[in-house]
Image (cartoon, rainbow, N blue to C red; front, side, top):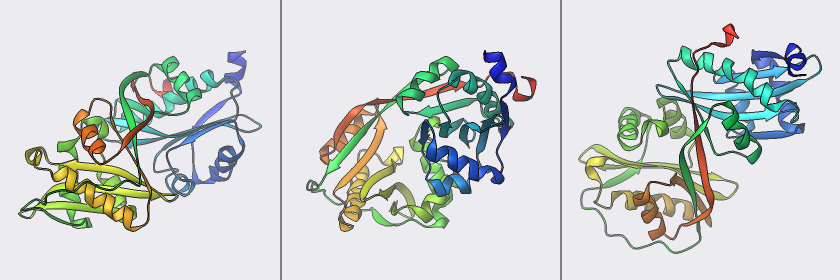
Length: 294
């Protein structure tokens, strides 16, 4: 049955002409999970690695992956027409993604969390749990009093800060969590609030926060390793929370690694509480065979 199914399945890279069919797949079908808004999917359709599976009657599957050089490709959108031959379809699609990732010298494919139907599929395709993240929420509590830092100045971030922000990001986070320059540049224009902490003309911290459907989200909080232990991270978080409160935001969420107990203590000090169960971060090493060889 599988050989019959695969003989009728075509795997290829998407073009902008496919968007109308992709939109239909996203709207009407069995299983969809997306880390991108619909407009972003359309805008980045060919910028990201977008693989589709189709037969003579319909588009059967969609897989979008964001290359984050030099370390990983992040799965951003997954959609399937139905659960018929799901495992077999993914087996056919993943090598096409891997082929493009290897062209970018990337050797790891990553999925963060996801719906149960997809999480259950991942081990069948060579994914293992690398890390777990926990989700915290804050619900309209008062903010703690913080003593000011004598040398810290907080201002809005601007495009000229991009080189320093990228260096700071890589000093702060492990490679799996690096943000590429393109993502940071986009955030500078689209984030609800993006501010930097400056000491003697050097950016030593930054926060990036967003608003989704009247709920705030602390997307990024970073402090230079040489300036930790001075309360700067707490001051930057306070700055983000005050900005969100000024918009009458009553619920704020954020994520952090399960192993990052220092950050968790900071968030709890502000009244954040963990919600739900930890979310798995799945990782797959890129195989040697290429899509063109299969």
